[in-house]
Image 1 (tube, rainbow, N blue to C red):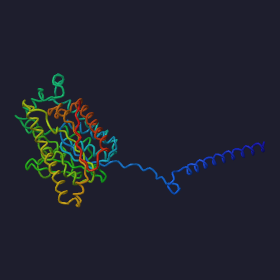
Image 2: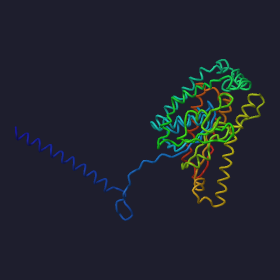
Image 3: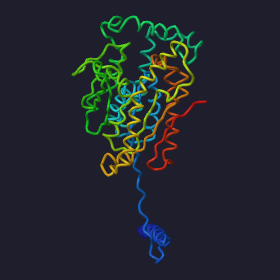
Image 4: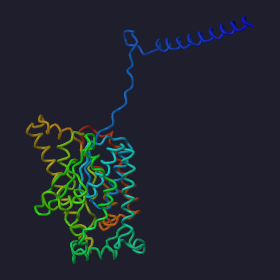
Length: 389
């Protein structure tokens, strides 16, 4: 019995040795068949390194409930794993930026996606309680364009007859409570938080003021989204403020000046051009609103083009800002046909179906932009404005 036990142990040890030798032989065989240089020496193959995520900065235009389109764009960008250095925004763009930035500082991209979705679902719940929401019959009769519905006409008439200081003397704003639930301002002040630039308009001077992370409060966000026909002006430390879209929609040049991301992405909610001439009173008012809210952006785009041309002609590209302008790529994402189809009145009604549609189209537009991003030539600007069928 001891002899058998000793023999078994010897056999097991021999088998283990053979296995080790086979592994060594395989390793040496791989070394022998490694790629060779022209001199016969084995070529060293470096370890594959994980590619760093592309860093971007977003400029988000305002547009009320149409900001759900921006949510879709951001949702797909976060899913892709893009590194977001900074976000500028006005009105709905500012609110999207604050919700995303707060959640991102607490739990990264997955948590930011979850909180953005929950935020827009909460807005849809609040909208269901509005006495001025369109009826189901109006939705069936007018489809997505609500500008001729009784609720939209009544809202327009009411805003021309009485002010929010009369019909809402206590300044009740449901958005205040929603923002309190979804934006952690302490998280926005942490060192690694996404850099935010939020615009509001001084109601007395008409000048834009840009607020950064350390200055942000609920009142600042409410000021950035304050339409004077609907809400009372928001009192801040240096005066009263209205919607940031009147003066900087969104802040583009400040975003470029204060960041280093090579790719700057402008998300437009106002169509770059409207189809046809408006002939009804609601359509004329919608066109006027779009012209007013688009004027600051057009001025900034013209100024950006002028600065690029001047720095190139004067040789100022050797300066830090000149190099920034020369190497930056400006991308533009928008859905003109979709925004013309849903109409301006729908900005006031964050209906669950509208939000779902805009989020879906925003994700699709972002997907198309991401698909072309890698193929674009260096230093090239892109204007990615897609149309739906």
